[in-house]
Amino acid sequence: MTKANELEIDRFLFSGGLILDSREFCKKRAGKIFTRKQVEAWQKLSWKGKIPDADVFMVLGGWNCRHILSPVSDEFDLEELQEVYNDIVHS
Image 1: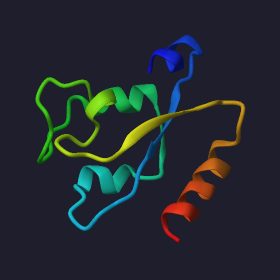
Image 2: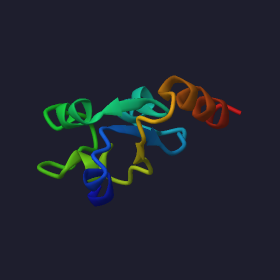
Image 3: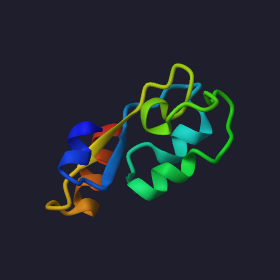
Image 4: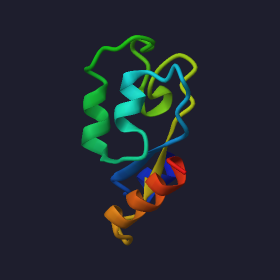
């Protein structure tokens, strides 16, 4: 996040695979790109496994979440990157 802040990157790919007991929170976001404001809004949501008062940028889905937010440069076509990621995740 420090480097993303330094480079003023405002978009993030919710990356990491899904498993049988993945939370709905993660299933709805996996493989998609979100703005910083969208991610910050998740802080106000509630879901099973959420770690209270923890920074959503750091813990995402909560306890034992296997996902990360990967900074995405605005220099690339975001829809194209999302399609490539979805192809990898779903193959």
